[in-house]
Length: 188
View (cartoon, one colour):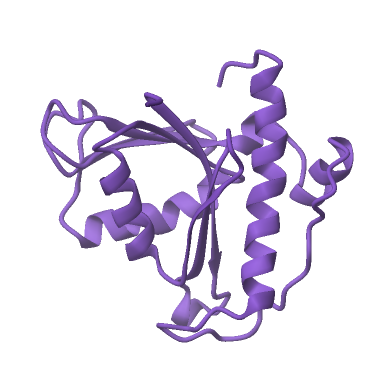
């Protein structure tokens, strides 16, 4: 059994200030490129992290973590988590953010002191390209699609096949690119 599971994740969100929330989440294993979860809410994603953190040390990557982390942090606070630089107790998290507001990583402890820590990193700091440019730069067959972000998707929105394909392509492009970098010896 592998000890560290490296995954690529991405959120899709509404653009309206009155209803800005996660309506889609996709998670892919970087090593196998297997889709591990596709869901229409952040709660399922957080549950995925908590469940898998019992089995693995998780390294989760987001492309432009600053954006996605805002939703994760808000969710954690709304569900009783507290910020703790030492991650000394269950349900704590910490972040590494520069003076300039550059978001490098965050860590979450779900269980007690002996539980594994989930580390979330910014793949944009590793590969400073857009997802569309990344597909071309790495010569990938998977290409970035397009989606209408201005559609208001309600709570419990049923994901369309087009939305699922869009999310899968986004995480696959970055996962394949990261896998290539890791296979060349890059340490994240």
